[in-house]
Image (tube, rainbow, N blue to C red; front, side):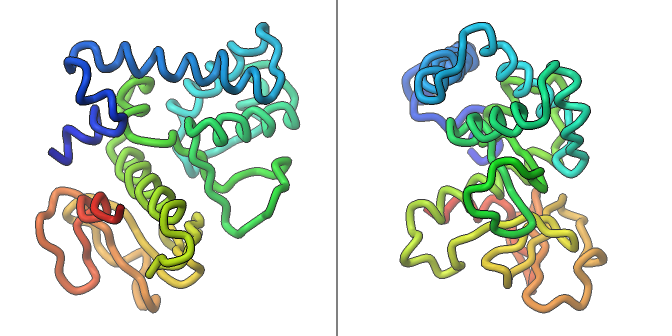
Amino acid sequence: FYKEYLEYGYYPFYFEVAKDTFLIRLNETINTTIEHDLAYIFNIEPKFIIKLKQLVMLICASKPYELNISKLAQKIEINRNTLYQYIYYLNRGKIFNILDHKAKGDNIFSKPAKIYLANTNLNFAYCKKIEIGTVREVFFANQLKNYFSLYQNSSFLGNEILASKKGDFLIDEKYLFEIGGKNKSFKQIKDIENSFVVADDIEIGFNNKIPLWLFGFLY
């Protein structure tokens, strides 16, 4: 069920529609979010809605750690500050998942460390080429973000997920996680205290190596 969840299972209407119509329903949902909800909340003129949709497609085609704000702004023909606003809007609309290297409060006019689509279903729906490494990171970041939002005052892991320069993710400025396939080694996070490899395609963990699918049981 884990592999199926990555492609189809995030949204509750998965139980209401056939698989061959799921992507149609998902596309309708995202269009409604952008064209109506975000447009109303942030007073976006209709002629600029296409820019937000273009941004979603561009993030699909970009690797999270190769984020180039200037190139993104050029491709959709807007200035940097407007791009930062659009990123913020899509993050608020649960279409993007933004991570920083450190908490930055309410300042939206600074470059995020990484931008992911909010969940893996969006990757399969909008990305022409599926990067399995990105999908793994999207799943991990999504599960931790949702867990923290639900259990903010009682989380055993803290309450913050950040991007990390040494591994992929830093939780509560203490626990370092590197995400990869079943053969992922500890080379990148070797000798770092409280560091873990989160591996896809393994059923059982050992030592500091944890199966990726287990993080789907956080909430």
